[in-house]
Length: 176
Image (cartoon, one colour):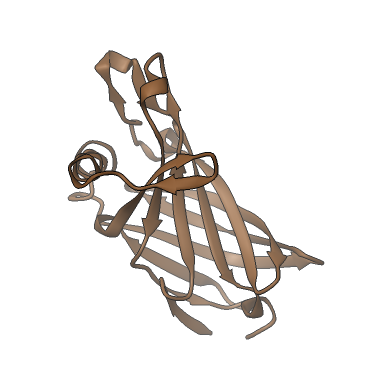
């Protein structure tokens, strides 16, 4: 069993804009900077993320991440915690996996995600490339009782489906 933190695993959450005013909005990228967990190929594992520690990296533009000014960043984070994730009521996200499956260059992790008081099955799919395994999944916020962010009477909103990406050391796929 490998104990890990955010120093070992990179996890990001990507949102997409929608609506009539989407041209003035941004696709966003958040980083999970504090997480703890246990990894094993042969036993169930778990990762816990304190919601309050989500950090806004910036706007995604043409494959690059462009940071916001402090005021905009603070406003976005406040909206995220107060109006979307309700982090005062739901302070942590947990992913518990039961199986890790591999084929040449591919990896699949099956488990259950507990978010916003709801637990649902989630499968991460990815590939091994060099020193890392890159996995991802898409989550519909509404499946977890989360109302996606809206502003300007719905003319600006966040797509209900967010993409979560995870990068972990490829060596973990042969260690246990």
